[in-house]
Image (cartoon, rainbow, N blue to C red; front, top):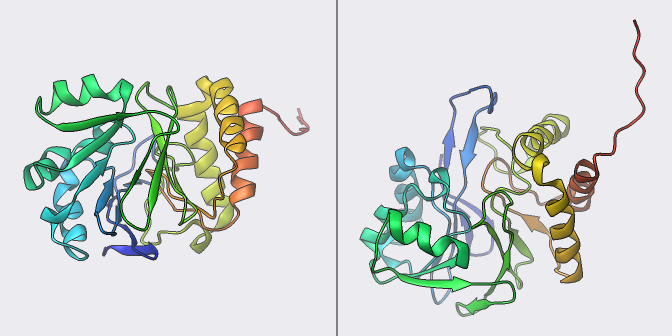
Length: 250
């Protein structure tokens, strides 16, 4: 599987995990995103066993040693497993994390990182693009956050809007809609359902920010470039625990 350009200067450089389990009956993907600008930025990495895939995909676009910024939206192992290798190749890269992630990332990895704690409203500029940060604690870890690239109308929400679904296709509209939505629903039920009230508050907060979004690129599964409003409406419905009418036949 090769790196794939999602938007101008934005590339999927992640890995596909074909193995299945009860939690991921269709397998999954570990998504990472490379944004090429005056400064080159990597958003998230992959599970450690897939480090070589990440490096190979980055190498198709730029030299892996040319990364200037690393944005870590979440420090769970499947998102940050390749982080040590990326830092070995780019020891002076700036690392951006939510404040709740600082202790965890320095304890597990390095003490001398060029680490920058960010909060909602903070941003960095890499040339043409501005990356904005939105803290999302408990969606689904205390350290979680979203990254939004305004000029590209691109939301990188980490685990939110994910699905466990392995495929050679990268976009949700390239496969059966019903199966993708079913996988998104199962992911929500497994991961986010316990924090549904937080989901509702965060969706309302994002709405107030009036972000223009025409692509959502989560950490697992497919990237959404169509049906954005339908996806967000589904999350609101699941978080509100609304159910349709059903008939039970005995």
